[in-house]
Image (cartoon, rainbow, N blue to C red; front, side):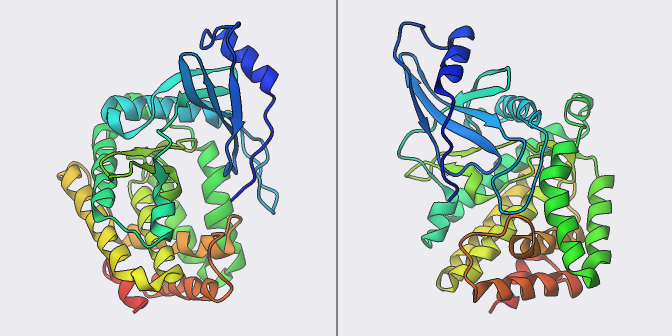
Length: 330
């Protein structure tokens, strides 16, 4: 996990006072939160305020140089507001968005990331189903909406934080796969269909202890784009967990099926997911998490070659559906 950054507490407190979020005479506690690769993230508590505050970084905290436009924070705030209007219970509330700061509701302390649960071998199909349903609701509500096309048409941050460090990096490192990766990128660029979260992965899902509530966070690369991208990232991460913890493979596969079934039901024919593009996107993600700029931190030296082999098989000899990929790991 990435170490927590030390925030400029005085500047942050002054900002919160200017925005009317805290009383200048009241005590405010600021605590850095670990895990931020692309943002400084802190918890802020005080009278009348219990929030998370984010500031976007220009250079990400990874080993290789990785630059991105901090203006993506505005995109994240607006995407959270839009997602909250469509499915209010599935995202934190936005308290304020101004001057390079995003202030959002903080989850209860008992909530954990879905990644934590999955790495522990807990693959709740009900949680996966909730994520499929809310994704379907967002995709269906935003497909063909001219306001969404106008407000989220900029794909600069998506290119900087996803396409370049993932797709294009693995294409350069695996020249024999460059054509299929480029086909995936071109298809993605041509598909300007609905709102795409851009990082619909277990680390960005907060889950209530009983599994009854989920929040999807970190919308900084949200854009109008390819509807296969988000489900590919969810399925891809379930496949990564399968390689990492094969004893829980059946649970991860069941969660993947539940996710896709719920997504399909929620879309109800409003838009179609190209199964070939879904498979390609998943293959690109798998390869990127071992050979891209942000490799999965929990994979061991023995597991990374297995992921690489799976990704190459998915891209060169694609299975009929993405859930068939689990059979390649049997």
